[in-house]
Length: 255
Image 1 (cartoon, helix red, strand yellow):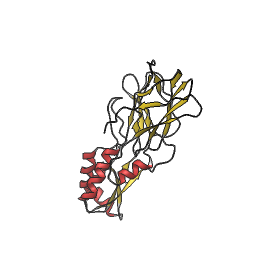
Image 2: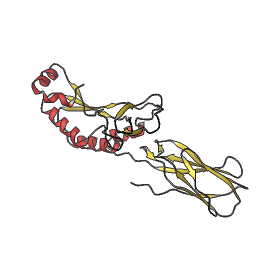
Image 3: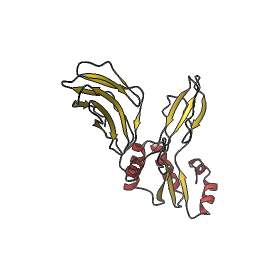
Image 4: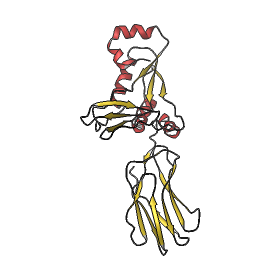
């Protein structure tokens, strides 16, 4: 595996890759963000294209390593980096610590792949993905997302809702991501009914209930709660005096 910075030493790099049948060019970086609001990314589209074009001019076959993972950077109140965390046990940071997620953007990667499918240097012989999805990972793409990006297609989240009634008078609201990309859970989730005696309700999984109005109650998301592709999550329940039909309204999703 070679890093783009190695190509600055043209003579030494040329000798190195001449000794192998091929090599892997890693175009993603672990450079930490400058601060909690930096918005850093693991891959920059223009730089990745530039590095591939530069590598091609050496005339040796190579493959490109692309990222699927994310990590979390922690900052103290003065904005200094305290550490990085990826997959593994959840870390408990002290109060006042700022956290920033540095992600592999599926839309950016799909744009890159789509461009190379149309036109790429002859020396670019394939793509490698770091890393393949594993069930239960929190900071890596899922298989549906990776399959879409590998085909050069931008994955999209698609949140749907389902209403369940496991016993008379009890209504439970589920959110389901039927798309192929992680997406934020919608907010608010509004529930309406026509004529019934409302007894109680509550939000779950990061949702809180607003004060109920006549024949309506809303559940607001308290913090960003992403839904992974294929995930189903119960976000609210309502209790009525008798079996009741409800209407659930989700906000329109962007994109």
